[in-house]
Image (cartoon, rainbow, N blue to C red):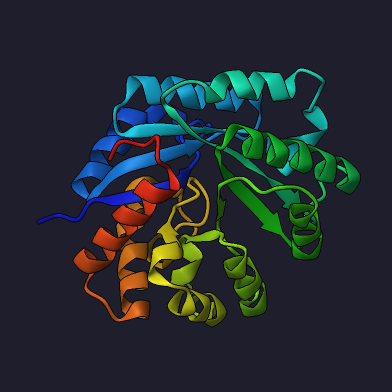
Amino acid sequence: MTPHLIDVHAHLTDEKLAGDVPALIDRATAAGVGTILTVGTDLATSRAALDLAHRHPAVWAAVGVHPHDASGWNDHSADDLERLLSDDRVVALGEMGLDYHYDFSPRDVQRRVFQAQWELAARLRATAVVHIREAFDDFFALAASSPPPPRVLLHCFSGTLDQARNALDLGFDFSVGGPLTYPKNQETRTIFGFLPADRIHLETDCPYLAPQPRRGKVNEPAFLAMTAEGLAKTRGLPVDTLADTLLANARRLFPKMRV
């Protein structure tokens, strides 16, 4: 039987993918990827993600403002996100976070916008999807400064094993994509071999970060099956067994998602 895999982080509204969504979903389904969470990075892409979720039963939406787009935050942004979160097809708030690698938005603005979304997720009891790159010290400090959301996913986790241990102690979940399969990325395999089975998820982050067999190509949800094979090997499990665990994990992390 083909496993039911869930891509917990995709960007189907990206211009590299947006014109091909029905075919992308068909290819994903054929590869065993039955559910896709498409994630907003600003208000416009969040609304577009929700539109896709209404038009395609396999697709669900997360809405939020990415640290790259934090400079676009305004006095109405939190209210706009709260309205979007009230929709049954929206299962998480994000992606929010901090990115000190590119600094496309000033760091003080990133911190302010992250804190606003973190507190909104906590108040609304929403799952938070979090992007952290080269900013874990500030993330942990900000996260400790106010009550946390009930469920937190560190998407495309790029921290160290010690940072993973810290996040694990805080009750957070972790997702990984194509980089798990890169030959030189042993640290990621070590971390995702160490993490408890009930805290891990798979993602594509498409159209970015295609797994090794498609590295350098436009990524898509169907390619998640390749990453699943890599994670199953890392953890010494059959893919079907891993898929059953990941399905249960997704149901817990995204209680509004009917899968």
